[in-house]
Length: 68
Image 1: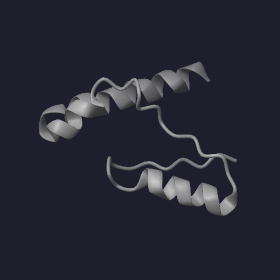
Image 2 (image 1 turned 90 degrees about the vertical axis):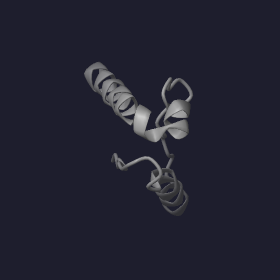
Image 3 (image 1 turned 120 degrees about the horizontal axis):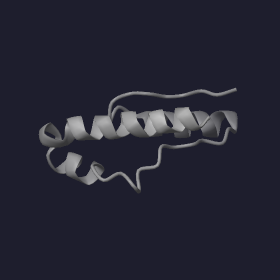
């Protein structure tokens, strides 16, 4: 079984995933943010960097999907 949690940044995806994993004894998998070149810039100036960040997410998700 695979459950995906999607939503805007800051909407509580990580919190929800952590709570579900703890409650159901599941192993959570989180999106890799360490290599994201836009995340820090986004938090500094959301209006300026939001489009770049969304395109990065779209591209990285598409790349994962194409590999599977």
